[in-house]
Image (cartoon, rainbow, N blue to C red; front, side, top):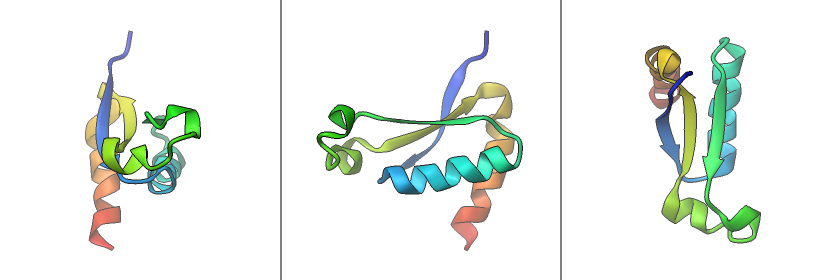
Length: 72
């Protein structure tokens, strides 16, 4: 069974979704998770954050890919 880890926190679902697409385009399965009351309290994304998750085995590669986002 694979362990899921957080590779990065974002302040919005849109940012996390773009990073997720980038990872998936590179062949890394990624998932977005947030606690915003099922979308009814979107402001909670800013305070609680939006998590980008991957399998632990893919975490190092995902970090390397995401570093290109930070360098732009």
